[in-house]
Length: 278
Image (cartoon, rainbow, N blue to C red):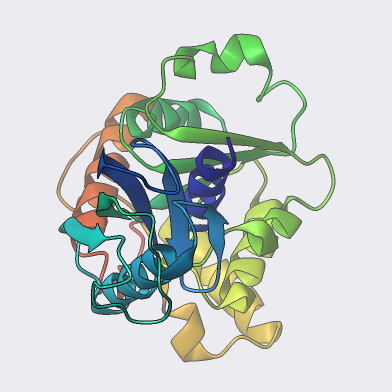
């Protein structure tokens, strides 16, 4: 169905939208109860009947998008040429109720590097309602057998196997994505950090590693033309401060908890940089 595809596409793009549903009909109307339409700031998919009814619904849906409300709203229409109308007359003779439901914009996370920590982190995040991008340049890390632990995921899982230039995936990520850099290769990590800074619309950039690694990266990123202010937006180390342990599962829990805190503050996601430990 067109409206289902629209909901999925807008979710993946992190674009807000409103789902409009015909919830009841009395008498004659252009569509039956259950008909649906999706409205975004600049697009409309499917139809609830056209005419004045639909135009008013679209206008009101976009008003909800402007205010950012999450509360649903019910609109009632009398389809009569004697009823007040805004932009066109409809004289079907029936009465229609529409439900306008703002669709949530869910968090998006990209994990670059599906090693021990990356896979453990993916297992935790997959249990949450978000869009999860898994990226690795190694052929064996993203095979179905290894990712079978995510088969019951609540999250939308997107697998990116990019043997060459995994940093190109950065440009495909929707605005507001939280990017986590934890590959097997420091050169790959550095290229990803540089690409992430140049993207300019990521919510946060997190880097796993030591103080020595970060010192080298900071110097390299500056050499490549990144400003000190931009470089300072990279958070390293990632995870909850004060939670000890170097086991992959412990690190993954710490990073996941840190991300959940960021999701709570999604409207003000200014990243906080912490110097890496030696």
